[in-house]
Length: 303
Image 1 (spheres, rainbow, N blue to C red):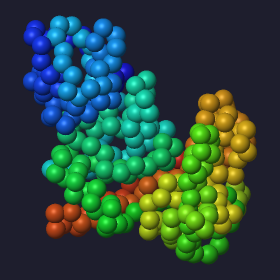
Image 2 (image 1 turned 30 degrees about the vertical axis):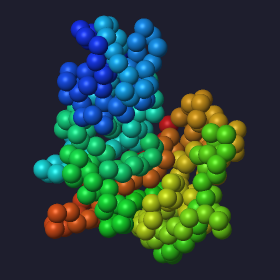
Image 3 (image 1 turned 90 degrees about the horizontal axis):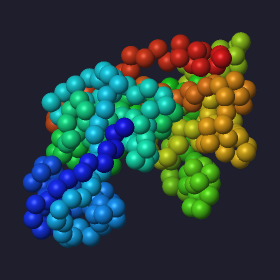
């Protein structure tokens, strides 16, 4: 379990954040942020005042990364890439999340290492991570300025005959319903979004097409929504093209693999972050996943 509660003791009255800095080697910003998030408890009550004082026994919840032995795709002095399996979260959803990619990164490369961008839990593929605070700033700036070229592979329903560019604005709904918040839709008031699609191979026996996807913008669920918009939803998508009832069943983990295949075509979302190309510190990099995605696709459509 990555989040652990530790009993601690302050022999004299002092600022809580100073104790965390001295004893656990946090920076002041890190220590105060953790206190504000309610990670420090005095007599069972969370302290949230960043200038609060402690004396005697208290409890502190901290992140203890664990490893499942995921081998990095590539390692450099400033950054590292992982080829994330489908089903692994980028960050823990809450304190009860047993494992996420941030576990693997921090276990192998230390507390200052951080993930520079996100892909969905069910999406597999390349994820770029910074090994220190300086490179994290540089990499995140690169993403903001769209200096990163990304290519995905998607297995879609039907025959995708021609290359096309989809420019359709995407709107994320603001609603109390968790389901509505998850679903992004094409809407004229949404944010400008563009994706290029190139068909690679059609499989007539399964009526599916392997498609290369190149997003120019990085909106939530962009590739999934654009493919659904042009009537070629991704095989295995549990949200786009599904009824609200079945979306709820998926979110509540009530679907068996057989039911998932019957409803969506596969046991997982068949979307893979396949290539990353960028320049960093005046050097060009181009990485390609070594995963046999076509093989994974056909394993995922059978139960």
